[in-house]
Image 1 (cartoon, rainbow, N blue to C red):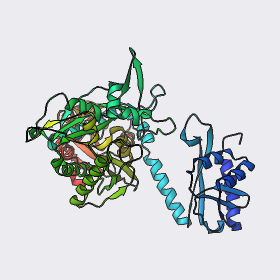
Image 2: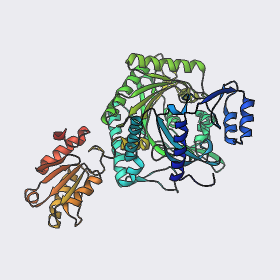
Image 3: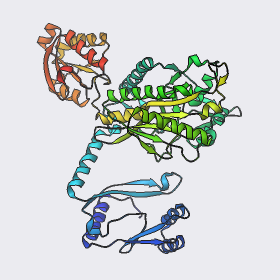
Image 4: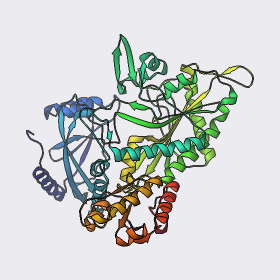
Length: 536
């Protein structure tokens, strides 16, 4: 193909597909040898399938599917005949690097889908359209929350409104750190390569890191906080009486993600985690995991993410550490899950390279799954860093290390949350919690006084001082997804109050500023998902 596919091309391809479906052509499945498959694709000059063929491990069964003249290298299964395909649609086309590697040639990819019935197909596209409406990249631009620049690839710029939301997320987690007994620390971003060799990242994670040489020394930007927390733990001698020691860190992290896989806020190169590490005695693991479950469920419930899915992710290929330590760590996490009595699914080979983990997966408002929090049990890093505490018997003992994140990457959670709420953030998170709308220019001063009262109550508010009609101001406030609009006219200016209008719920009538400020501050303090208690 010497040109990029167009919509007209897709329509012609789809028409040909409809003809093939109507013909009821059979699908023929053949098991062939590697040599036979290679001969077929060489004869057809299909180089990409030859590369795919080489990727199939020795000993695996090689299957071809054929209908008409088309032959595909595919595991299947397929329907028996094309007329068993009830409904289908080609969706779009895009460029894609072969194997997702920008060093390979650019190919063209056509996206399509098929269902047993037209009703199922229509329901699918309704969900796709809803996902498009909720796309955080579109909302971020429309609501002026964040942007990207080619000068800092895959590294977001948070604008003032976006920074307000971001900082509310951090403040929320910091409040829980006090409740659950964490101490917050700040650690460097750049470390000598020797740290990463000690931790094992240099040998198991280097391709995902950024390195530079300065003064003939090699340095690496940290992709995660755990090694720096091991260094911090080692600064002082510790007694068993000090454990568990819970260290939290919002430090900036950097991970190299290939340009072909980065996507909005959900896959970036520069980000921050609500990251923490717990150093404890083996006998304390169960209680700490229980506390982490309490914290996870409290956080997710605040955002309306109820009943998260739980996965036990076990030892991956290329991991480090002793077999016995891995077996023990996996058994301990499984015991914690069983004792907690929560349903969970084993996810083989999906653990971190240094230890098994429990992953938390939430469902958003349209049913999509997002992996957020994680609890990782690690015997390896304390061993590699020779960490120790003085036990009750006066002898040095090795602590256990629990890695945990609740929101995960703040950037990624920001994107997930934005899509979950379709941009309609709860009052406590909204960058602009209220907008004051003077009915005309002569009520601007009274509107400024309303705003000042809200600011004094610790709320975020602005005044729309444009010389526009009230209807236009209301429409713009709702498009900006401001939860509370306060209208000030003659009656309100005289009384010192405002008329309250809620997004999606309409007018609530005139109220005093004491009522408005008290209701809003209570709603914010309780982190209620409803913008106004009386409207719940």
